Length: 188
Image (cartoon, rainbow, N blue to C red; front, top):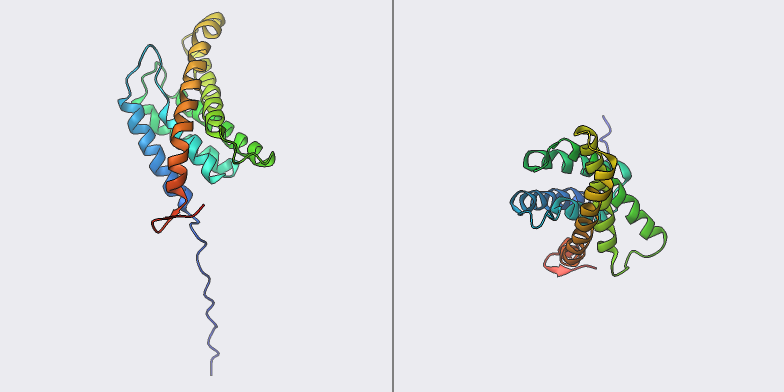
């Protein structure tokens, strides 16, 4: 008589793929807002960076996952880009997502994960790094003088970084509440 194998029941890890759903949802929202947001005085918030900064802050992904988030964000922005070189978004979003990931890990290592202005800092700095990379690529592609990049492009990047820091900070808390909500109740 053959011995029956014993079945082992392994429960699924609680919310093990929640980060995927949150990432997809927030990137979709960011891309829609990126597409429809008007340019006001040369400044448009980069909603996609704000959204992946929030996602990375909430999920603390590995660096390889953060690179994946940045790559997807860069690819999805290309069709709605208003720039002279849309493909530069791929490299710039990889840099921005990497920056956000490293900042989250730095906050955790310093035991500052509950720091009140974490969203502002992560969103703002990720935007400045992403924008710096993007505008430098644009400078190279268009063969612009370095002084134009430094005196005209980087100041706009800094302004957008501050705006994005504010956007990220304002959206972080409500998104965090939704992310940790379980069955209609907060689970923080």
